[in-house]
Length: 479
Ligand code: TRP
Ligand code: ZN
Image 1: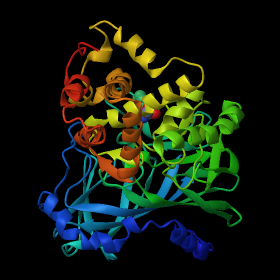
Image 2 (image 1 turned 90 degrees about the vertical axis):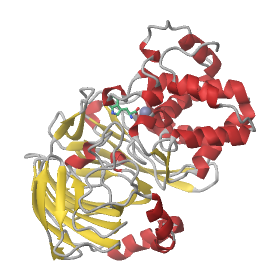
Image 3 (image 1 turned 45 degrees about the vertical axis):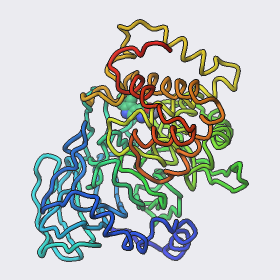
Image 4 (image 1 turned 90 degrees about the horizontal axis):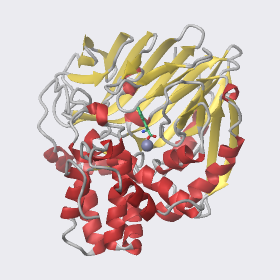
C-alpha cells in the first residue's frame, strides 16, 4: 500500500535542513554505555516500564528513535490500511519485545527485514524475531488494518481514533494512551522519537499531522499527504486529522527573526476561526518573550467536528473541538514549551504540563486587562478546605481518573505563583526560561524543576514550599 514518493529528494533535503545534531545516531552510540547503565537490565519480552498511573503502557528493553507511519484511510467506511516502520535501539539482547497496539488486525511483522512471529495479549503486541535482536539498532515493520478504536479513559473521556460527527474523516487524539489505537508504539511519554507520516486519502480530502507539510500529491484518485516531524515527539502528542478542511498556509516571524511556517486545518462546519488564526502569531510571540524561542519547526491548529469536549496540545498543531477561545489558544500554545518540548516522564508529573499551561493563561490575561496572577492565586486560595482543588495533591494522586483535575491545572499554576512570590519576579522568569531551554526536546521529573528553582534562586530550602503545594493532601496553610 506504500504510495509512490516522487518527492523523495526534496523530503530528504528538508530532513537535512531540519535535522538537529543532538538526536543523530553518532552521539547516541557514543553515550550508549552510559544510557544502558542507567536503565534496568531488560530481559526478553519485558512488557512494561511501570508508569505509576498507566503501568501497562510503554515497554522495556529498547527505545524508538523514529516512527514512519504510512496510512491509507477511507472516511466513508472508517477503514485503515497501515504500515508503520520503527527504527529502534535495543539496550540489551532481545529474544522478544513488546509494542503497544489496541485493536486492528496485524497482518505481518518483520524485524530487520525478516519475518517475525507475534501474539496479541490485550494491548500488547508481543514480537518474536526469527533470531534475537542484538544490542543496538534494529528495525521493525508492522502491517495492519481494520477500523481503529475509540478508547475510553478512566475519567470517561474519549480519545484514540475519533471519527468526526459528519463522517468526513477522523482525528487521532493520544493523551494519555490513545495513540496505540493507530500506531504500534512504545506508548510512554518518556520515549520520544522523530516521525514521518504518509497519509493517503481520497482526492478532495485533507490530512493534517504533526511537523512540516512536505508534499500533497494526487495520483488521480487519492492524495498522499507527507508530514515530517524532525523534533522529538512523545506518542501522546502525535495526531492525524482527516476530513473536509479549509487549509491555510502562512508564515509568522518569531521574536528571533526566523520564519515559522503555519499550517492550519479548519472544518468549515464548525464556523469561522479567523480571529484565532490572526491571534496565533501574537500568542506565540507573547510566549516566546517569556519562555524562550518557539521550540517547534512549524505551528498551526486543527479544528474539527469531533465532540470530545477538550482541546489537546498535539505537537505543533493543537487540536480544538468546535472552535476555540483565546484561553484555549494560549493554553495549548504554551504546552508547545511545557509538555511537548519539555515532556513529563511519568504521568503523575502532569502538573509540569497543565500547571504551566494554566499559568501561561494567567500571564496572558494579566497582560490584557485581566486579574494578576497574584489575584488569581488569592481568589483560588479562598476556596474552602473541602474544595476539589485540594485533593488529591498534584504529584500524589494514584487514580488515573484524576489526571485532568483541578489539582493538576489550578493548584499546579498556584504552585508556580507561590514560587514566584517566594523567589521574586526576576528569578521566577529565569526559572521558566531555563526550564524550557535546558530541557528542550527532553524528558523531566518534578524533582528536576525543584532543583532548578533552588539553583536559580540560590535558595536551598524550597522543599517545604514544593511539599506543601505538590505533595500535601489538603489545603496548604499560611499563604
Ligand atoms: N491536555 C489537554 C489540555 O489541557 C486536556 C485533556 C486531554 C483532557 N485529554 C483530556 C481533559 C481528557 C479532560 C479529559 O489541553
Ligand atoms: Zn493542558
